[in-house]
Amino acid sequence: MPNNKKELAVAALRNGTVIDRIPSPVLFQAVRLLGIEKLDRHVTIGNNLESAKLGTKGIIKVADTEFPESVLNRIALIAPTAVVNTIRDFEVVGKRRVELPDTITGIVKCGNPKCITNNEPMQTKFEVVGRDPIEIRCHYCNHTVAGKDAQIL
Amino acid sequence: MSSNSLVSISDITRDEILGLLERARYFEENPNSKILDGRVVATLFFEPSTRTRLSFETAVNRLGGRIIGFSDANSTSTSKGETLKDTIKMVANYVDLIVMRHHLEGAARYATEVTDVPIINAGDGANQHPSQTMLDLYSIYKTQGKLSDLTITMVGDLKYGRTVHSLLMALQYFNPTFNFIASKELQMPEEYKQFCREKGIKFTETTDFSEDVINRSDIIYMTRVQRERFTDIMEYERVKNLYTLHNSMLDNSKPTLKILHPLPRVNEIDRDVDDNPKAYYFEQARNGLFARQAIITRALGIDPLAK
Image (cartoon, rainbow over all chains, first blue to last red; front, side):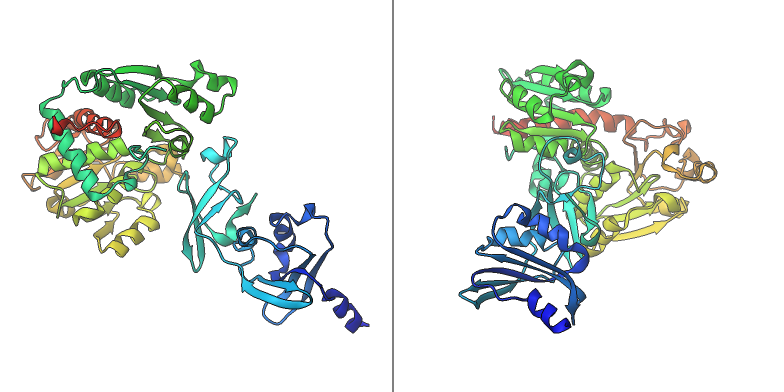
């Protein structure tokens, strides 16, 4: 019964956050970047669901949790299409796209093996120098990389 | 973090560059002012570089400051596994200024984030070496009487040569015309050409080191073509002599032309150029002393011209 399965995937949430339109290949990276593995609330993760825009998509539903904007924006580099729905009492009270910040701290590994960040216990930091297509530059060694080729830590 | 640090030439404005050149000129006229009396400067050379270290240490000594430091990280706690952060924080307890060279790229930028003591980057791997750029700018300024509206020809390894990249960035404020001369393998990277286009900076790019280009130039900036940069050794053998400057090539050049080279030189400038008054590479190195005196006093917040 395909219909039942679809309903199961979008089962209603009383309060919480639904992150939709995550490209399927990066769904589990997104889960990790958002720190969802550590949550003790109900979490529903769906992947390879049909999407008119993306072909297939992933979705994350977390009950009784709202994420700060800065946390949600951590996935903007890998999932720029993601949409965040905030649910309160079964109503969608907020809907917005994730936004790539001007600097990305502690998410991307620098591809330059001679960069200080790969040799010292410290956080990486990248500046977004291009947005279409996305290009980021290491704050320390100036090595630049296309957003789609960035290595996620 | 101290705002007087100098990590990259792109951190400072056009006016700050001109201010540093004025200071360098002052120090050339007054190399031995004792304005660093009572100041202690650390020279931390995690990677050996005798030429750069001696230049910085001479600059401090001639201004009456004192120096502590090391010329090789093997003799320090770094070899015991101490982090850069800990080394910098420890040394920062003792000194007014840290001059550092490191083989890792971004090391100096990181050092500025862990201490309030100003940091001068004396080279971080293939990344930045701003005091070299300042001495190049001072050499151009001194020999041409200006920085603006000059034709600057860069020859050799334009792909990996950090000195030519930094010089290009610094000259953005001064309406230059660039000629880039290099083999296909070692051409100026696209990001710098794109930078020129965005800033409206005129440039030409050729693989041919012709007299026509030489005769139009105010400055020829030669760089070393390193064998290890080539994946194809046959290609290296083929091109290595194409970018050698000989005295006979300068016959019809401008009377004010100067030849610059960051040194060390190998084959790219024939010895027969050395006695030509247009050869400037040895004086260029001497200008490093004055440029570094200028950078050091700026970092310490001391204005020699105010005295």
